[in-house]
Amino acid sequence: MQYSIQIFQPVLHLIFSQPQVALPQEESILSRLQEMVHPSEKSSIQISWTAQNAQSLLGQIQWGQHHVQISALPSPLPPAIMDRTIHTSRWQPQVKMTLRHHQSHLSLVYLGQHHDPVEKMIALYQVASSLASENLLGLVNEPAWTAHPAADFLTPDAIAQYRQEVPFTLWMGYIRFFIDETQYWLVTRGHHIFDVPDLAYFFQGGENEDEILQQFMNIFYYIYEQDADVVPGDTFAISGSDTQMQFSEVTDYPELLLGPIGTLVIKKISAEED
Image (cartoon, rainbow, N blue to C red; front, side):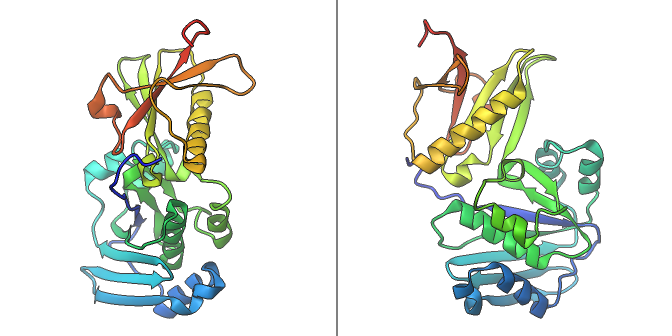
């Protein structure tokens, strides 16, 4: 299913604890990448730099169908980006505080031609892993309004696992837009990178948010893997439950809810409404 003719490329920001971004030696970067890419692509890895100094870093890494642009600045990300990503992420306050106190950042922009968005994201994580140092605090996924600590998420084994199961907690944002103290919209961010519309659900108190998050993930898999054509008015059942759900258009707060290629609202309906 094609929602937009525009192709949205993924972007990651690596954030560091030191004012300058100190990268590993080029031989180390190459060796790390060769451990992670397909054996047939090892010899095609090319690393080039346009600028390498204390004030700026600009270069690119290419292999196979992948092309990643690298740029770095000795300064934190703008506060507006931090508010929209680190602040809204679902990590503990002390983790988010550590991420907010970074001193420099390096941006990875995917410019390659690979057709699979998962492989695009994996390519960015492979480059991030090859550039990682002890000063790396975490990664900021600006298109998905989220961020996460480096932790063990950049090991070759972890990155390879992303092909088997999409890491929703890393690659997707789940944002609460509060209407009042008890009512809020839960909205996904980042689906558009995979050519899937974002999803929204209105909570009115006393409902299980984990249940809706699981439905968000199930719907994402259904649309992404099956190339399903889902439109407002379609209904679906929750497995193991009598609950019916229906897709509808965004009618309230479009400035908050609408994603780059649209948003589908899901709501619970009674049997009579079905």
